[in-house]
Amino acid sequence: MRGVVPLASLALLLAACGQQGGNGNAAPAGSTESNLSTATAVPKDDLGALLGSQPRLAGLIKAAGMEPILSGKEPYTLLAPTDQALDALPAGTLERLQSPAGKAELTGLLRHHILPGTILVADLARAVESGGGKATLATMAGDPLTVTKEGNVFRIGDSGSGGARFVGDERPARNGVIHPIDAVLPLPAAK
Image (cartoon, rainbow, N blue to C red):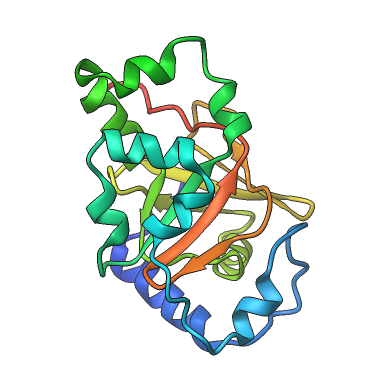
């Protein structure tokens, strides 16, 4: 079993991926892989500003006090559960997480949805291909997430959950990228 991709190796992989053009792989449905690999303009909005189109997720990030992270200079990849994914949580979960007593759990859950660095769909495609069908990435919380590809759709999760599918287009920001996903990734079980 492969371990978590060390940060230095991931940085080298991402640097190499960023220097290559298209790779001939089919992009996931709804992705903007071909547009991103040739884009020259740097987006001016940061991750925090892009969340304006997802006010429920933005509210969770605000409740956790994580807005400065997504508005800062460091690049991150945000796995952003859609409104439908948030609606699928058990009744009362969002309210509990947004309460003062739920802040630590909410922060941990959000950190489980943030990856260090900017990881585009094209980068994921190359990592999965070079990893023999899967790639393991570390979250901001240090938890491993495994990415696989089923047809033209990427799936991400840990070994104990069904994971989530990438849905819609990736949204580049000046300090990273947002990937909409169709489920909330559960925190790994305590060891």
